[in-house]
Length: 515
Image (tube, rainbow, N blue to C red):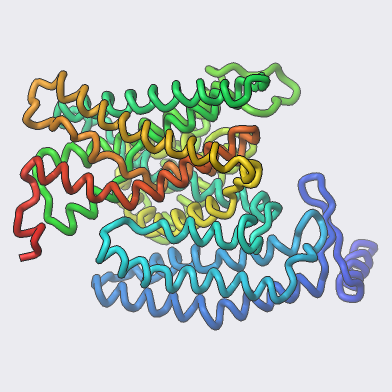
């Protein structure tokens, strides 16, 4: 009876008092009832006016265009993941440092909805037209949208909201790691040409060593009194790893537009895929070598033990997935199971200050080599890949904070230029080394490394994950260098990739002239 009375009193407290206090993760939050209700009301209005019409239109168009049977729910689900990002912002913004954020007035919230709606719905039309004329990859618009709504511009997405959304972003990052891990089949490695491996390790290691070494020296010179070796080496290694990886956007666009085909095209495609795999492994090892945080009740774990923790989590979750969903054929059930596993693994990585990219890569590799339905899992993940990418890119733009170097912008500009130039010469030099050592130099062109300059979303996911864990003098430098590099090379890499394939005689002159 006493419990019923307490619940009634608690309900009365919620209905009649202006705030509601609750405890979560050891912290006390006061939620303004009226403000929270307005947020929910706006979320409902957003659903009725924008989200569901967009989902219906996009789903009908995609099913009509591709004759998809039974795929409507999967497509709609992928649309929801992005379309409801504003709702997540609204609900989190009502919990700002335990109280309602006074800066987030009703007008500001409406501005946030308007910016995200216009950015998401109209950016693709604008970028699509620019793509057809200037030939570059999409995704840049999401970074710019994040900058627009972030603390550096309109401050619609405040630093506290950015911090509160970190767990959700970790899940998005983890899904990418799982997707790339699923593409690594051990039995397929023996079918690849030896020259592909020569180019892969040559250009990756050359770029990694050049960028990491030069920036470690630069960091020591910039902050001679700073004894933070963890910050120096972790920052330099993240810059080196993000520079060494390549993205498939340029090669896919060139293949699609110019009908490129041949051994050089296939080699670039293979090297790019494994660039990302190698990069994720190197990136995950940084979190083991320079681990942040304390372990309670036991001694500090060594690098080898943290690596074992990463591998152990991936293997255990892979076994659980295989046991419960190893023979599942329903796409909806698979999607729910995959998201559940990714949420668990990414949550564990976030709590332990490890990389969700690396843990989920291990999980994906295990599923790729043990599960008979790994191809279906890849198809399901591809249906939500773009929304997750979009969320990561928007968040990266919003979390990008260069205020600490605003008065030293010439220095930041020099560092960005150094990064762009060193990355270019690292890829070029790596390709030339592979060409010189090659047993088939006619296959490995001297400038083939310049076809690997597209950087893409995995590099953005890396710096976002780095920024979540490592907060030091070098965090803003790392984020600024990588984000500007991603934008720059997404514009330029298509031309360079096209030039490499023209030199390899794998693009016909008719495709170039459009005749």
